[in-house]
Length: 237
Image 1 (cartoon, one colour):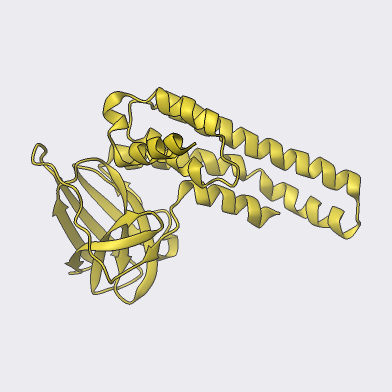
Image 2 (spheres, helix red, strand yellow):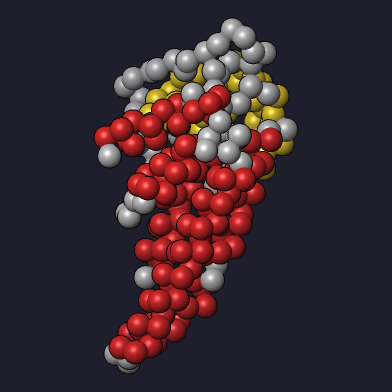
């Protein structure tokens, strides 16, 4: 039970990526922006090369690489819209998901906390981390229920199991309401369609609520790749 609900949150917050080295796809770029400079610092692990990967559906495709010198690496380029990209590392299976936007920013990546890199200088990444932190606080309520669930299951206590299931549903509902409220509060940010797109990965998709949230996005935000995927989904449904 605990594992199931934890998988729900992580499926919403993170993309499930499968590395595919057989293809390389260049990102869409625009000449009307100054571009990005990403500096990375590695702690507790020592790859010789870092790869910047484009995320397409459930796969990742390397588009650039950087040698690691003195535990640091650098990427420069231009993206048309902020999107989530993935960093992978030579001889390591670790994957780091982050938002690539046209600004100068820095990632501090510790192997012991690979899913929570420290990101400096990126407003969008900070905003997404704020969302993830609050989401985890909601789902942390599951921790105290799990021992009760195990005990009730061992004792075959149907009444207690029903109470726990209702509490779990309440936690899930709290998260979903928080998530859509967060989208509403950030309707003029590229964060909004990213979070909304994650709801398409839920086992139960609330199409009407997704459509309502999509319609409030600003026109500029609706041009982003994440928004386009949502629009395609809504067109088919």
